[in-house]
Amino acid sequence: MIKVSVMYPNTPGARFDHDYYRDKHMPLVKARMGAACKSYTVDKGIAGGTTGGPAAYVSMCHIFCDSVEAFNAAFGPHTKEIMSDLPAFTDQQPVIQFSEVVVG
Amino acid sequence: MIKVSVMYPNTPGARFDHDYYRDKHMPLVKARMGAACKSYTVDKGIAGGTTGGPAAYVSMCHIFCDSVEAFNAAFGPHTKEIMSDLPAFTDQQPVIQFSEVVVG
Image: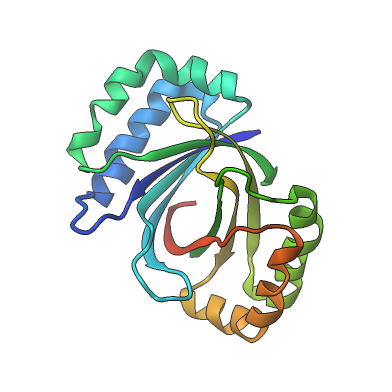
């Protein structure tokens, strides 16, 4: 199992509509990916670590798939539609990474 | 529910012992936190996003707790022991953040 983490930087003044992200954007991603998206999680940044500063990321999602290839096959054809939805909820460019799920 | 994300930067040449992290460090964290740690996940970075570059983080863990206060109460007394274990598996300083679990 792999996880695709999409992490939106919490730059000062970052715009992020958490409701739209939860209610519109992520359901769109799930709908387009279909069964290849096994599940996904959504996080809302609260605070940074021991220093008590701001969270590094205003929001994160993690999309679970069988493999990187499965993700690419399901997401690829819809990349333009999904990415063009970003301005509807944020002015941030996400940091994206693929990870192996070591402990799930 | 909240999630504490501990993200180890994937700087060039970063040292990270994934086996130790999975088999020793995270079980230590769980043992010290007890029931306050509802569960945790561990990720191993594979690759970056659409550019195909390296993953931003060589490894991440996400620790699930009822609240920030519950995390702090359970982790706090063991901070020194747990943090002093870091050199056993990495030379990186993690980015840590607290998040609200919006979709779990």
